[in-house]
Length: 244
Image 1 (cartoon, rainbow, N blue to C red):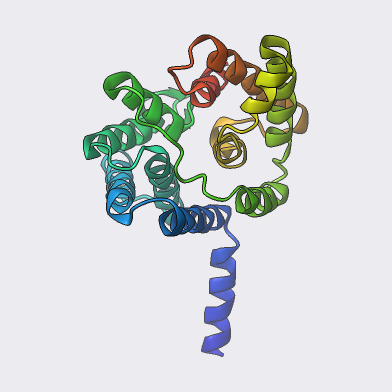
Image 2: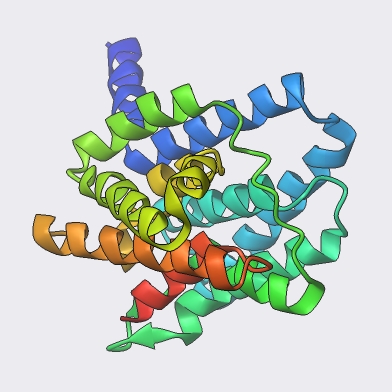
């Protein structure tokens, strides 16, 4: 009987969207480390980012629910997977601290944070240290689409990547022509579209606003890459739409 209860609890645990997302991020990290990157350059990024995010969560929010620590771990994992391997660990610290702090300081109606935490922290670190972002965690587009798509399907949030890509294609064709548009599709946007863009706390829950949100983000991202390529257009666009 106790074994059955434990199995049921484990099943319920792994059904949680944040746990699924954490597992997806772990798989992407392992694939990247086994195929492209030196583990000695990467594991410190992940360790520092996750630890700093969880510590900052405790600092600002106290010993809250396990769900809040899972959110902090997801934020730290994303930051660690986007910062270029071999970068100064201070970048991870600043990005993680500002990411979680923004949930406490920059809020709407006292309890709802405005900006995607990971995107906010990474953009702040970009302004301070320059661009040290290379999306090394985007190691398998197949896994991102299949597992990320399944998670979003269960959450009724697949509208975000679809609308983002559609309007990215349209705006790229208008601004850059067909040749440049094809090269744009090779950029590491799948990780952003399936993992970062649909973050539930800072995006709308209804279908039509989701399409509008993703579409505007796609247009702004393309525009940013065209006019200010030194910045991370996707992250910058997400923060602008979050504010809107």
